[in-house]
Image (cartoon, rainbow, N blue to C red):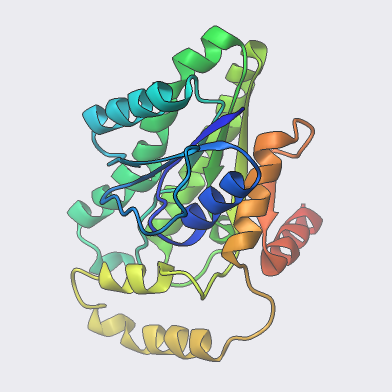
Length: 256
């Protein structure tokens, strides 16, 4: 029975991905900073484990817990992330570093920690969840976009060095997901107010978001894309997740 470790399972994409893999018979280690037992149905194939992806000791303990419960991990999904919504001038360097510590370095650290067992077995899959903002830039998301674009480049290069060992690395790129906590999370991370000079732009952006309709991404879309990345060796490197993500990916491909 295959085993998966997923980061950032307290809500949204990570939580739905854990549900989907449980429903399809996998052994699931669902990790989150503050574990909650009421988010997923009780199962002997489920372990809910504390994990702070910015802490090496926490990463080591979570991987050991997964191995102890279910044996070797077959798939790791790096989903944990922080949002950041502000003009660059309004974000402190400390806040920028915090975003990169979780979104970028946390992904690298968890991946690095699990690779020895993948390499020893000659199999394993790394799935990194980023964003379609890396395909089409948006206002007030320069820091967040940079943290996710770095993961894209990291994963594409990583895939080349891991292929000789039978290990796959893939990307899942979700689109706009208003039903998740990303927007609230991002706004809450405005440690400083948006600089006054950017006020009119910010108002335009927020108004546009409130009025925006059309295709969106659901947590289930992302979970299904992660499933494909984990189980289909022939899937492409980048998997857009959600109707709007599919449109953006097609536009990006057409633009060359």
